[in-house]
Length: 363
Image 1 (tube, one colour):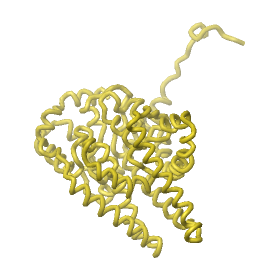
Image 2 (image 1 turned 180 degrees about the vertical axis):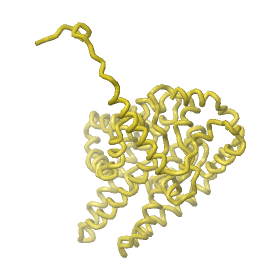
Image 3 (image 1 turned 90 degrees about the vertical axis):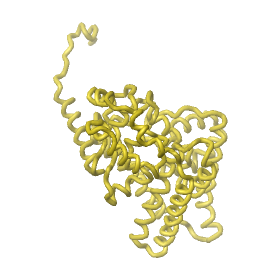
Image 4 (image 1 turned 30 degrees about the vertical axis):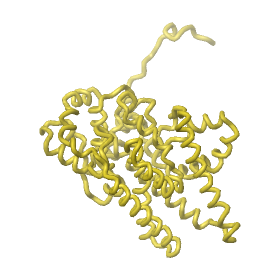
């Protein structure tokens, strides 16, 4: 990080902002057309997969649903008092049915705060480059059990919280955020935020209850095939997002406060138009380092901003160090750095202490 700090000090955020100053206005029509077309194609392919059991429609369905879900990243960065209708429609068509209502992602804003990024208060960051590579594998494995935890969170814990304020506080702090750090504690909400959270929780509970009650009671059949299909879809979506997350940062933070330029250097721009890069990084997320420099930059202008910065920034600008060409290469490098760090730690000579240094010896 010391080298990162030196490079970051040479980067001018003011200069970079001046280069893209006319790209910060989000175009609401793009959001509506993109999201609605994506989610509707996804639902159509979901129905076709149920009827025809085709791998092709399942793949298209997962790609569309994943892209639709990732609009939540844009929602938390949009102006607070604007795009209200879009937020409501996104939650009704996507957030609620997929059990990822928008309130679960608003902690993402802490991931961009200069004093919180990469610290214990940043739930979306772990120092994976200095942890065992097994943690990376464990993180990828969450695709198998995270969907079941979401069902438990909204199907069982939500109604129990109505009768227990203590349980509500516990669940809010420990089980109400889309984060990668399992020890993260979410701050308690304001009264206004709590009303919105309760409404979205209720909608998720009613959706689960409807899926469990309507088929056997009104259609005289159990929804087992649909549940298997939904679970398989959720596994794919969570796995894709886990891969994206691992390839979005270098994860070498030491837990101290960082500058925005250091955030940029810890982040990755995937300057690659391959189908894999486009699939895993939808809605502008290929340019994650650019996003950390300018969180309010709308996704539909992210590519243009990145190209313009590459063209106009000096040849020795630290910004160019954020560019990578392959998702898999970034993850391989992360695993290699984690393994190397662990080897260095294991090879350090043990420090011996005399009994007087530790205190009296007890028999």
